[in-house]
Length: 207
Picture 1 (cartoon, helix red, strand yellow):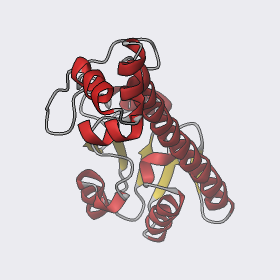
Picture 2 (spheres, helix red, strand yellow):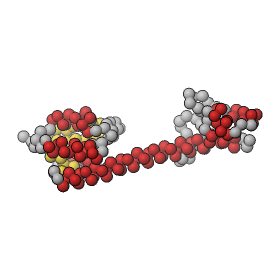
Picture 3 (cartoon, helix red, strand yellow):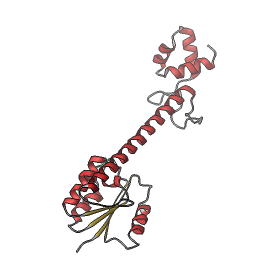
Picture 4 (cartoon, one colour):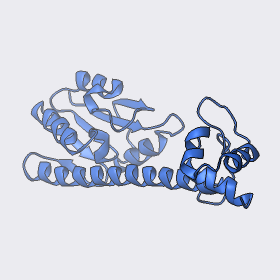
């Protein structure tokens, strides 16, 4: 007897699988699935077969079953993993139904899936790059002005705090540089501060 199986995945513990379940149930005409598997708080960078929920699914499904998923990227960590997962399911005689895409068949269906998986993979990489760029911009702004790139005061380690939590008094930096005639770079090295921070301290003191 064939079964209709659903699989859900969310990346963080504060996300819910309910939106995915609701969409799949609607697409299925409201009929409940025979079995449901899920991975909550599991990053999309983890290969499908290494996720607890998906691994259990692979042990459960049989020839003639149909697997329903909300999106292509639920089937693997990248385009290659998605293709590998789908081919293994099709080899076992398990049909794969992707929400908004339809049933994936061998041949042309696999090719379409491969293209979509690659697009999803590229978008995920762009998100990672944008996040990293935002962190770099915020860090540079914090060192230069003591505020984030959005103009907000830092809520993290105070500017002038060096590794280990030791705080450096701006006045002592200015005074030491004035007495020694040290360069910005030398002062930065002496106190363990960034050159941008030393420049800001000394500029504010008009030394």
